Length: 305
Image (cartoon, rainbow, N blue to C red; front, side, top):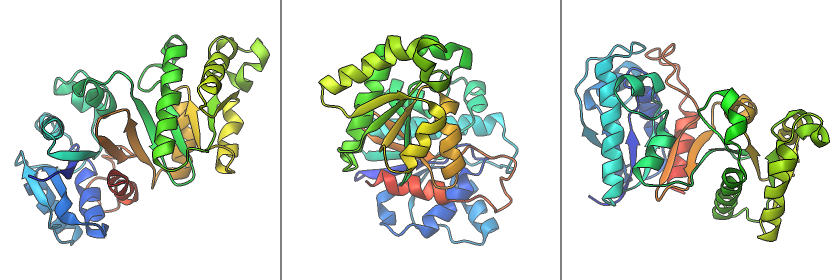
């Protein structure tokens, strides 16, 4: 098997099968370079329901499920896990060069006995990577996260000098790969008004300003910390090439407001490329034929970058 881009089906009861079928029918690249890991029976039924042809890609079918769209089951969750496990196996063997993951259910992972909160943490552990970043990409806004899937009350204790510094380095490396090495990186503050000189919180002075100073010593164009309620505006105006947010919703609320349909989740720091759409399983619209494939198509294109 030559090196391919692997697509994992995600939760078969979600919109993953639908956006995959739609995206592959719109994809202008070489379909022979793609391997879909999932359930051929589910994909065939989805294509029939959408009145679209089943794309001529290689399909590695690991299950044969009877699935009602929008109604997840434990059997489906276990299959969902098997698709990811196979993609990891093939990537470790060097048989796939990138993985594009359709949406999964975090509750489903738990029910299937997987001790991870999402793809990002699972893949980092599988590849033995300690320094990794959840990053969201679009043509005009890129956002990296310092913390991801943790309760808000745990955010402050997880914002450390070392963690923020690692995110800065990996984010700068990503910008360089995109040909944007001259672009500045903006660091969000933790607190309102970026702490207001210490009046509204101390993380900015005690941690973030020191990270910025360290980055400047190493030639990294990191600036801030800036108030999070204005920095995204200036990034859209072209002042910054990437924004580093301190926690999940701080970065993803503005990003998804603007790029819910075409944004891409990419994991920085892995030995392979891993991308995914910026949306979830959307069980409420699964099977209705109205899921927008644009984000998945963007994720697929970025995997070939």
